[in-house]
Image (cartoon, rainbow, N blue to C red; front, side, top):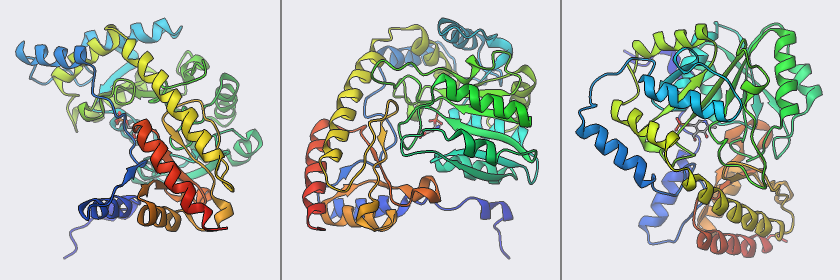
Length: 388
Ligand SMILES: Cc1ncc(COP(=O)(O)O)c(C=O)c1O
């Protein structure tokens, strides 16, 4: 008897697992590994947020909450978007979920019919394609440049009446590139022409540099007729393990998500939701400080990459990733990533994980300390010089 359902064929084992296992083995052997593969902030959650969670636990906030989320958190999300000039009704347009991942999964599940095409602006977080397939849809990549610059003609060429949605993600994982308001408008216009939905993953929107302000897709679709914005607390407030995210959309779409949540996770963790209120309403200086530090690291890591002959590296304006192009070295990304890890202990993520068009790129996360950036990249440079 085979106990595995057909749906599991749509959920591949993690493409980066091999790198993790190899890195662990090398570390057990006493080798130094520079971790550039990590996709989470390297800071602890700010103390005021931790204290709010402890207070909420002590106050007995340990039971199920409404599936949609606790009203004061919905109100705090409404307030936060209001300050950015986006008018939403927290109690009708928002659902709080255990992480942005669940918001996206529920949103796609509720919207995709069997066989629907779903455009994915790529390179893209691998989870999008898995989620689309699991929901019965067919992901179709719309490639962008190494720093996520949109090709309007390509987008129009890939759009058609079989498309039910597009997934966009700015600031982007893995490139760190951003979409400006004009790009967002163009995507929305194409979606309107072909009558499909826009899922806008905005989880990195607080991590932007050089004074850039990331506009929400909600700005170009204020009625939320065809837009669902997804965000959360993981990246902005260093709360990856807390599992707290949300979706914002029209009441019908959000109610669908509420029904899914009622029948799956029930709700986001109750005391974590209370901590979320403190995150949004409390002191925001943490974000300012982290942003300044990430900008410093981004400047340095791109500078070091640009010093290496044969590598092209953009200086992206958001998130904490760079996605340099190593095509001059002639090795595909999984082979190169493994080689760099074995030879100089530099652990990165192969570009192919983010789309087949990116098999000569590697993703480097700079959510790591400056010393590792300096030492890791110096070793990388020395090793790559032996290629010529
Ligand atoms: C683009 C993107 N969206 C969503 C997530 C997950 O967010 P959360 O921790 O809120 O589920 C990640 C995490 O790596 C991500 O890179």
